[in-house]
Length: 263
Image 1 (tube, rainbow, N blue to C red):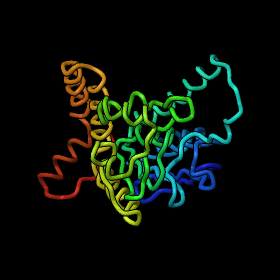
Image 2 (image 1 turned 30 degrees about the horizontal axis):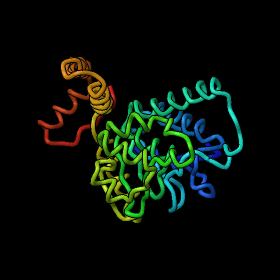
Image 3 (image 1 turned 90 degrees about the vertical axis):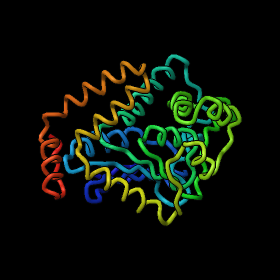
């Protein structure tokens, strides 16, 4: 299927999604939210051959520069309408965060505002050494309203998150690595191969195990340790009788590569 604002392709068992508005620094506008939703939840989710997703930006300048300000400048919107509209954005970004398969952000350039908020929803972030990241919304009189005020502090800590959002500063990839905002920094040439190689390593593992590992971590970060451990025990019980567990253990004993089927 062809999309207006992104490119979708399958590389082995990985869905590669490129945000594709390079003339606007891949800014979120047009049909991008709808396209991203369809690509993830209609194509990648339903395809059993897809075991992992990589999101990146088209071109070499931007992952995503955030909301398309040119589309929004000069327009007014009633508070009640905005409140409902932003709920839809929250629902989409939360669905990305809770996607059953691992999602890797390959940050190939600028990741600002809503662009960084997309990356924050991903499980792992790998940045090119040329990347610039930030939540500069305060500079134009608004706030990070696609989850940035909630996800960034949970990832890098309250103090650093407040610094970045209250100053609106852009940071380079090395600072992002130092504060734990990204997992890895590589050269621009190595970015996509590195992301795809990591996706392949994830894709080689049991899909049910990956799904419940993700969910257990997410649940545990929202509740106390006791409740998190209770969910961990529940999730482990769900997979203990799966075909994949039996296959994984048998393959280990037989010293061969397991063939997982997500069942």
